[in-house]
Length: 480
Ligand code: C2O
Ligand code: CU
Ligand code: CU
Image 1 (cartoon, rainbow, N blue to C red):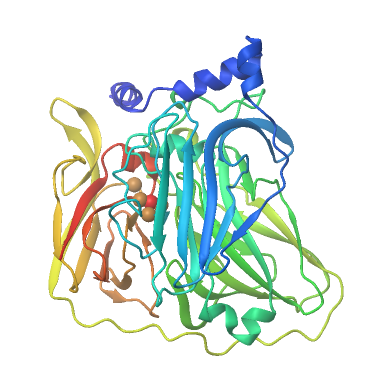
Image 2: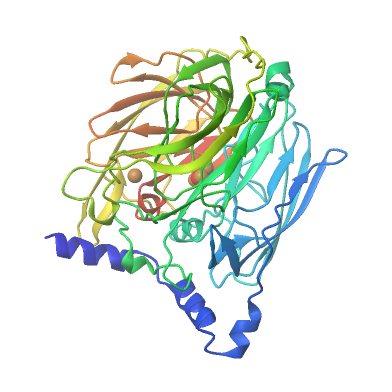
């Protein structure tokens, strides 16, 4: 039984064109192939808008990259892992001249941004063939919240493979939150969490060697493409960590030795006030913006990834949870100083009006007659042409997300952020804007979502991207 399912999953998973190409290249089999691949320095460029325009050339290709303490052949944007950090402000125009130098089709999704979902904006139905170019152009709305967003490929069927190859970058919107005096005074660090599965030579492991059904994971965990980087807190004593889980499937249960976190923003922007927490679970696609006070004994403290089990017993395979905490980064500070106080108030999160409609989404995997195993919403695997959910622009809906399976599924929707109302009937303790929410086995999570500004067709899906590629996605049409 287990054997059959596994074989079925292998055939469902994408072919390994990329793995083959990389293998040829790193073997140095042909001189010609070797020359095509340059080694880039790990210099990381930030691209900020100027005079209300952010124009960037972005190239997706496969190159030899310095990763952690070794070299690896990875998919990347502009030779960087993670890709270049883009920064803009509300009202800015964004122009991204994109070139696909991958041997596969791809496209770009702007995860979490509230921008048009059609045309050459956040349109996941675009297909950019190998060798093709496309200019993405859109405007960040004047009233867009400040926050941490990101970009990554979203070509259905190849999303997991391409993200796992390394393609991801931050998209920061600067605004009101950044101007709060205490937040502004804090030392700001971005942490992009990615995991990789590499062989001895630094080639990506082919998907046959990965556990696709539970979601591919790699043993090499990197923070900004580095292994256990050192983060120093300068004398003012307040650290602002802005963390993105850019992994395909891996969850991070974060904790910093002896220091509580003060959460100030979630996926979609600021909270009303900081929330103290001793640890934080970040599922794929989620972001957290936290403040840390350097008010313990001066020294070094480890940022840990604590064990977490996201799949039911008996089907863990290669993704069995590590039972030891892993060190992600080290935070250090030298002298004890009068720390900047924490902000007491941030930006009020608006309470949404009552929903005009309630819908139910059941998440599970199952056998599809004639097709084998797939991942499903309401018992159906994804179909490109079928509209699963039709909503009206300028309405508010409640969506009941129910996980009837045995694996955790982080639910994500494009285009508009939502608020979690309750989990298993228990009201959420504070208001926050989210675009990914974890739904555990047996759980019923109620979210409330306004559909604003942009009509068109987009998607919702599980952000364990193998589950998305294997069918756990639906088409959402927002009607004007
Ligand atoms: Cu980051 Cu449709 O996803
Ligand atoms: Cu998204
Ligand atoms: Cu899932």
